[in-house]
Length: 160
Image (cartoon, rainbow, N blue to C red; front, side):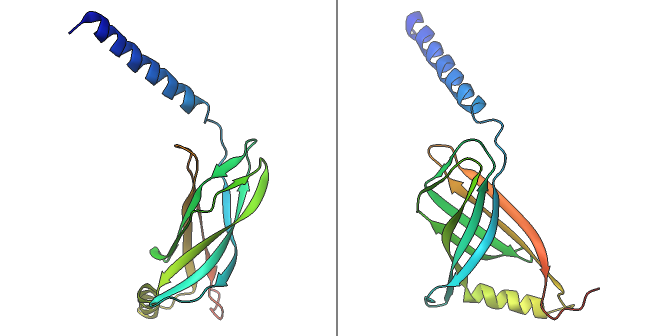
């Protein structure tokens, strides 16, 4: 192989690596965003699916805007997937601000029946565990993931 071509190939690889490391260095120090469910509205059911519009309150605790091209969300209940949704609506959340982001989600009635059956089996359920996770898809490689979890008491459940 021609030594000049070989040298320029290595130079190109070194330049690419330097650019990638510089890009990664500029993305450090971001605080994680905070995401909570602000509201849920019913949408028209479609076949064996229950549809809802979930409004997420997204808080950006950083000093730069959070740009996104779309949203994905998954809600797990009792460690099982309950609902998922996507939206291709783009948006921006200014620095140190919050915004409502709407995502239509789908709950399969078959999945809902499975959850109900598992909750009726065995011992009574007093608290329900949930986990909300997803991502705001940003430009290029700039996606921001989030996760929120907790539990709540069922109405009418006796405290331990």
